[in-house]
Length: 209
Image (cartoon, rainbow, N blue to C red; front, top):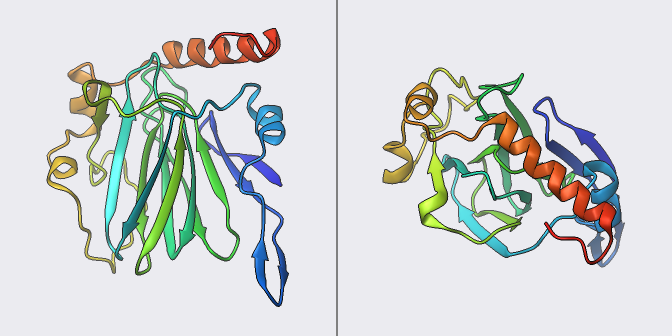
C-alpha cells in the first residue's frame, strides 16, 4: 500500500495494491501496521458508516469537537466520489484550505483524516457507495458543519453537476461565521489529541487514548 500525506496536515491518501484475475479483484483497503507507520498512532474503531448517493449529492463539510474529535478512514466501494478534506482548525498553517482525492473503483484509494479536520464528498456516479471507519461514535451534541458552497472555501465542485445538499448542510454557516460562533476546533487542541494517541501507541497494548 502506498501512503501519501495530503497538503492538509493530518490527512493521508492510501492506494492499495489490487490483485486481479478472472474471478475479480482482491485488495487490502486497511492495514494497521501501515497506518501506524504513517500516522504514528492507532486507529480506534468505534463506528462504521455507509452512504449511497446519486450524482451531484454533496455531503458535508462535517467535523466534531476536539477532544475527542472523530477521525475517519474513507473509501468508495461503488461508483466514484470527489472526497474533500477541509482544514477548519483555527491557528493551523493551512486553515481554510482543502485537499481533494477521487475515490473510485479504478484505483480504489482510501483517505484518512485526523481529528478536527472537516470532511465532505461529492458523488460523481450513480449509486456511489462510500464507507468509512470512525474513531468515535456519532454524538449529535458534538457534531458541526460548515457550508460546502461557502465561497471562502472555494471547494472544487464540478459546475456541470446539480448539487443536492441536505437541509441541515444547506443551513450550515460559512467558515467565517462558524469561526466567530466558536464552533471550530483549534490547531493546538488537535495537535494535543494526536500527540496523546501517539503516546498511547508508544506505551504498548495497555496504553490509553
